[in-house]
Length: 550
Image (cartoon, rainbow, N blue to C red):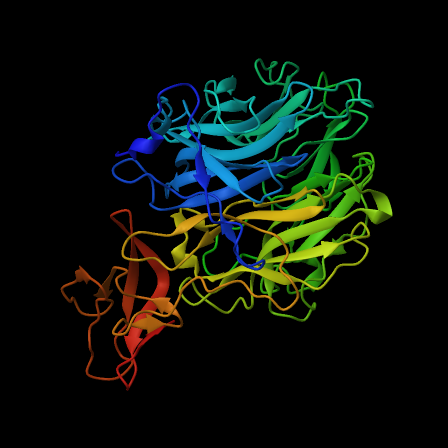
């Protein structure tokens, strides 16, 4: 793998890149805060960045994400981006000492999340490391630390390593910043699950700024699940909402003694078949997004179709639903549907990123929810258009402002391809800085050639009437397009599904049949030198000779 010279490591800390000329962008224009520099063998799909988390403290906002995503799991490295002036400007870089891209020994890295420990002045990014194929699996949980405000990052500290039959997944991190109210001020908590043991949930605690981590602990009932997101109340109680291992229920558990013990889990939402498979082969799982207000009320949001009636989950699209709790034991019921679109609308909402302003609370809590959506579920990976929207509440979710678009549209085929579908992320994030919500998300522009163009962006709420700019400007004259998707010079491969026909590669391969509409093709997209089939999607010629996508 070739690494650009400016990213080569010369010490334990990685150099930061300054992103200039961001401030002049229009309010509705998303701001790119990083991009994938890796290319060559062992660099994942280039250029892709996916699955960001963010956290804010004071005027500082830090985001972490995957860089160079592989189709079968993990990424070439973890990335970070930091603003110390309320998001006005950014520096960014890549985590040292984890994968070979950063001078480390692990095969791949995934599932980054961010926290800040105010007592010890340490920013932390937790990551899952993976063994490279053929036996790819999660082999350790590590934490990278920054003690200079998120500008440089040290080599990682190991939280836990796998044993026999273990396969770690989906870590998350949170710290206790209740300086005057919590007996456990300065504790940080990492949560993850062990897929190899049926999704058994693990917790570990640090009390020295992430330098050392305690033994793995389980809940009193050995709860299983994935996607847990711990949050810490002002009094020190840690509450961890999570999805069941089968992804059909949301539950939570808590600790009231600084992580020494963890109570048995309680239900947040009843189990059942309540998730509609998102169209366009999009990777989207009903994992929770959890945040907390200034008084300790915990809010949880996830994608769910149960409030759409009996056609859920077969055909009813997903909504974003929410529940809240003041103690982590009793959760609000019934579930609240975030009114992004009318209940009769074909719009499907998925992969939310919830933010809560920590300077507000109760009936005056300010919430902001970023989310992905499709205007209709009647589409495929080439014709679907994914948007990212934002909706806000100033009264604890009792009512919501009208939703606004902050990014998109983008086609699923512009995104990193994975074994679970086209990937923006299993989660995105929203963080409040000085009272303003900043959504952090992956945005893809239409590819040019075999190179993808998916990077991490941030956006603040646009002014009324403003729209985000196009993610795919009109193709230059002479280039063939389909529903706004440039097909040249993107490479495709096609073969006839009937009698054998020699196949070939190129800008766009087609086969003219004698009768309009009688020849269909399997379309495959070139991703990092590998042909990836868009299953069940076919090209054919109509009477005018135009290509159409089904």
